[in-house]
Amino acid sequence: MDATSEAKLPFNLKIIPVNADGIPAGVPFLAPFNPETFSIKENVEWEDCSPPGTVGANQVYKSTRARSFTLEFILDGTGVNTNGVKIPVTAQVLLFREATTKIVGSTHRPPYLIVQYGSFISSCNITSSDISYTMFDMTGLPIRAKVTASFDERTPGTLGALLSMLSSPDLTHVIEVQKGDTLPLLTYKVYQNQQYYLQVAKVNRLKNFRKLQPGTRLVFPRIVDQ
Image 1 (spheres, rainbow, N blue to C red):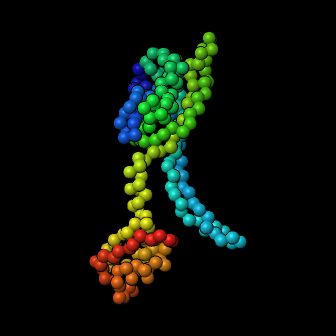
Image 2: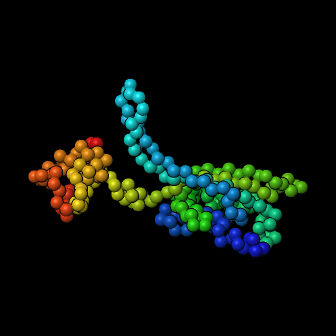
Image 3: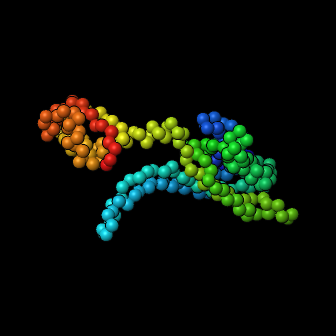
């Protein structure tokens, strides 16, 4: 292997099949070249709550979907990046499919995946793959192909629930008053709407909600309707 290949090797793309708990459960796929392109897409959903007949939009946050990302990389059967060892492209495609899309008998689904490239690492599921054969030998067998693979990031159920609950208005919050805090301001921070400050004052039995004492701990109860 030449010096250039050795320099690239630690950063090469790795796709590792794992079980639901993130434990390796199959033969990993190692790309022979670093990806040509690598793109990440953020997916934020909004709901338009504008009354009929109004101009403009009043968008209310609905949810943040899992990130998605797409990788493009080359498979090569000429041995240019494997110290002269020629691994057939068809075999490399088979290894890629074995790691990413083959149905696992015990779970009846493709494997969960961990994708790692450089400092990027993601627990995910593959959503699509497109293989384009771009070079052939004299017998018509492919000796080079481009793979375009897309993935959706995966957050295990328990962790995902915890993350979504961190700032949820459907939970009870306890906040310690700091100097300069006002009840409407704190109410807005919790519920993104200050109109509930009178209810908060009632729950905390505040006689004078306009003058909050620093160090006081206030309870902001869960709400059903915002």
